[in-house]
Image (cartoon, rainbow, N blue to C red; front, top):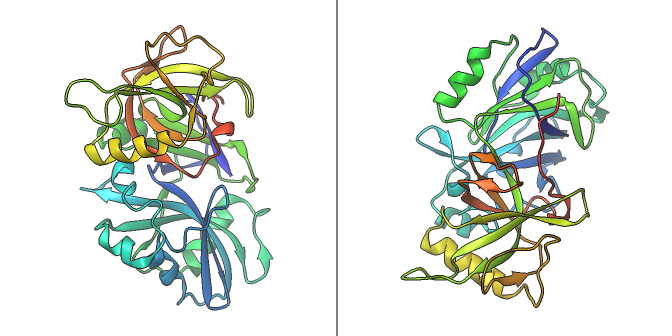
Amino acid sequence: MLAVRSDRSDFDDRWLFERKLDGVRVLAARSGTGAELVSRTGQPLSATYPEIAAALAPQRHDDLVLDGEVVALDRGRTSFSLLQRRMGLTDARAAAASGVTVTYYVFDLLRLDGHDLTRLPLRTRKALLRRELVLAAPLRLTPHRNAWDPAMLQDACRRGWEGLIAKRADGRYAEGRSADWLKLKCSAGQELVIGGWTAPSGARTGFGALLLGHHDEPGGALRYAGKVGTGFDQAALRRIAALLSGLARPASPFADPVRESAAHWVEPRLVAQIAFTEWTRDGKLRHPRFLGLRDDKPAGQVVRERPQG
């Protein structure tokens, strides 16, 4: 189940509120004595986060499915950039060598002892989760509040959080995006598709900037949204440049003209997480900053997020 972005500021007691975490969405399933972690696109993640899979082994229930977010914490704040160092690793030794500690914040319980819980109200599912899940590092429950106060979002922004997630307390769990879950964000930011790059200049290596876009609709035309040239360290420049070299194509993948001299084009398969201040009137990003690559969302599903609700 996925949230939609919203600018709503009035909520009654049918809603509850969680911190918006800046990490990777993960479903965790325990069956018998084993545990399996998968991304929202079905990619296996047990080898990437083996300590989370291990923490599910001593649970007293042999059959359960959890929903939550894997994060890396940097001085109390979730850091998607830091988490990048764990993403894509496929064995426990590499995960340990990364030096990045992860935490799995669990916020929903979808199945328990052969019973499908998705039709139950969210508040009931959360009560069962709190009662039945055995907590041990790196497992944590995602705390929530039951009453709306506009100051909550202001406080979240002051703390450097991504924002809040508002959820219908009486809502069922439904696959896909739903207005029963709303993203209340502190600043603009979303996933965008990489469709090309510009050459580096000066002492810069790898590339100068990434050319970004989004689809009109899932699988639709790719619209140019501007370029991002900040937020990269040397390791990211080298790694992304290597990925881009294997995706080269002769013509632009964008439906719109891109006025960048000597641009290099790539197949639009890589997805980047981008922070920015706002959209301009002509549909371009203002002050974009690269946060990291995402491998948990197909590029063809990336569309421009617009406030709803």
